[in-house]
Length: 509
Image: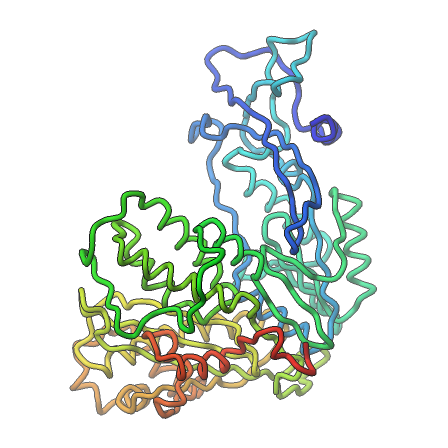
């Protein structure tokens, strides 16, 4: 507590002033926390002074609060590029990050419990810097950090505001920000070291060395490859759900068990269901194999039943048997690397799109899914129920293609900002009608009911910016994101998602 308070005083976080009548004064408290490493061992005891932001009043002592964080797809894209080009990956942690943000509003706070100034007991703290717990603290810190990085020569990405890029005369440096956790990589280790030194002179920075544990994801290095694993995080979910010793099962969802809104009595305590499903959503960061099952149980958060909870427990039982599995990022990606200039290469984007027509027995909406690869590395995926009912399988597949193309366009913009040029991506679909519809205007008469905004796919194809090709259903990788599958097919498609078990990485892991 004394160390935390010393850091606050050193940072000039507040100034003691007499209480101004009729002003809002925010209370504060001490929060204690144990920080653990990737093995669950205690690495640090921490005490933090936190403002009670719920006492703040909108328009009085705070206005805007939103602060961007790095997208998971951006993280996987950067990791794929770094591994392919054999770049070092450095991890940084900004200590007391929120204390560096500058406040634009006038905020008063009571003195910390146990540390009231005996000479000025009736004074309050006029905050000069942001503090943990304040509603605007994340935004103030991000503004401070982004301003600093821009002064160092970086520019913020337009596709992902939490990505900062330094691209000059063949020099490429990428910096990813998730609140106070930072990943930095690039083609010049000396420049990276200099940037870290500059940041260390401005903030209380801790250089954690080679990237190994980020946002609850263990980054395992072996030779030139990486494996992203959430072993510890999944073990924690199993423990909290009381299933740490459960019996494993081969698939996350049964092919015969249909989930309905009123298929069994409501749960007495729905909060346990919601907490577990919310945790499972984060587990899909490195486990695309559970994306469909998690999306399905998410649809009953408002009124979960006992059968819904059984479906959640099945996902947990599947994770119990596959705890050691993770997402494999290859060095040998199959990229066609060709120099356009000092800092431009040609990269391959491949996508697989699928839909399960009228798969929901409740509202007959379809479930669409996609998998997008950069070279041979899976960087983006989705399993999501469509917003409208489709009148045919062709329509539902066409909608799924449109969602996939929207993600592809975003990824192309991201790669262009990263200094990479890529050719027209290839999208594989297992529905001939939808494939023809992307390029043949003759089908207009049969598709009057299809929303106009989905036809932007045809424009991309006509301009040569997209190739849509047919693939047989048996080879459609995105099938795993649209429906429950029998174990044999599920395991086959899971291997295509680059999900690997540690013992199976013979010669690589």
